[in-house]
Length: 276
Image 1 (cartoon, rainbow, N blue to C red):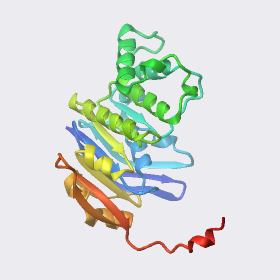
Image 2 (image 1 turned 30 degrees about the vertical axis):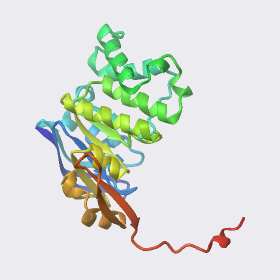
Image 3 (image 1 turned 180 degrees about the vertical axis):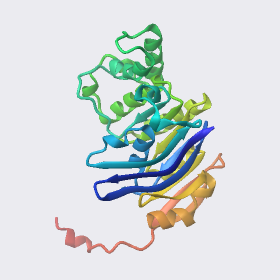
Image 4 (image 1 turned 60 degrees about the vertical axis):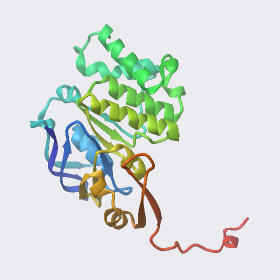
């Protein structure tokens, strides 16, 4: 079983952001959602999560989104939230919360509307905090954390939700190198337990190292999709990103490392022209 999007489209006002998106995300995989800035990655994740209508402006969405054959967009939000977790870039809350309480928000879909946190909820939240390495900050105000720490809190909230489908929009944003690797290791660990992950990434080398499949967007359309080894190749990357790419072997693995150079040297003024 898998995630399938057929004819996915989003229009904001008169601007077409996504058009005719067809993609399949195989179950139990980490699939990288790749593409330049403005290609529609964040919008596609919101469409799949069923919150496309919450985008700013006058929004029209089209298409069919199915998970294990069930129509995700036709589900009640609560039922959908039991299956799908979305972590957006720079996710914020207007309510003053501790780190632990922010993570416990992930348990809301699994309990009755007015029920207090159960032992199972607290156990799931603690396991998620342990996984992202934030147990020592559990009682800190969320607002007091750095951007990278908050990003890890929101990942913990999604893990505590125990979703079948995990949607992540730039989960390595604001993170240092060690934390980036740890975050994607957690995503891989989640898929080994049966979760499916669709992860928007800018860093193609992180995608090459951690993803099984890749979907590349450009101009709001899918231009390439398939196993990472078939997609992250110079013929695709160079055309989409306007660079010249060389594939190098990563020592000790069968994964490639991508090296980039500008397709043409940028036309910059002489150093002295910058002033100073």
